Length: 400
Ligand code: PMP
Image (tube, rainbow, N blue to C red; front, top):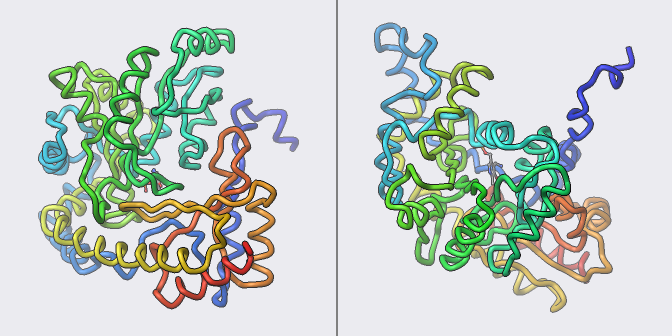
């Protein structure tokens, strides 16, 4: 069977994630890897999950947890999230929240909801690779997003139209972005809202790492600033995607979307058509665990990640040649290195794995336009102090 004859055109834009392919190769015990971007499993609140699963199954023989449920998501969990969103400056109602299977599903649904082929999506250079993967299926064209720059909205609109569509949304992580670890300051968030208003497009705010601030002052989410401007969530243009993956555990696949009702109503229809609802059992268990331990647990994991970040920054200061610059994240899991444009991150990785048994992710994959070859991403989330000291010394040797 020649499958290419029957595949949809959109399948042509689906390709294996370079990172996933790489991670397979790196699964060797003697390699120090800063390539993964996953939470440290030693930090999972396993006992709280065991207790919550047991309690959920004991409740009327688990009838509610094992049954179909509503597409909007488990109401008590959405009610808890209303309280959490309120705390970060996002007053909203239960009906402004839909539960998704991880925030990754929200990105897919939002691509499906907004993008017709040749529509324009503005993304950061670099941006989260999984967002490009989700959006690519809907065949957009990408333009670079730079909240600090001055844009000419009319030119951008004309170009989008000439390409056969319109500017539909800007996508970004405002806090501790994957891959750079960087945070958009408040004035950048305000400017982004101005830009989106001038372009009359939506903003997709990816809050996957938002709870993992180690130091510095918290900045209100873009959605909070949008609500402040508009006097309530119903007049906003920002769609916030949250996740329990980086704080509690990614394996249950529980995330959420917060937005004005017209957006949520359409996402609910989309969810009905796609998978009816996210797993009931996982939502009920997440609700138990979140209510029991969320804040105490997040404080605990932040202390661990912060100390690993400090250790990695200190090692970078010590080991990197002067030509290498790196970000100093206030939270999250990543540090981003930029080096001599004559060097290529992918070549460096091959050399690093072969000669020094150390791994990272070459940065090029995170750029929608194929640039950024002279960058790489490091994650400190799962590394011990000894691995950080030794691994960064090895990367220093490669870069020198
Ligand atoms: N957004 C960003 C920026 C991420 O790094 C990730 C996970 N790598 C996700 C979204 C998706 O996470 P999840 O689906 O587990 O919520």
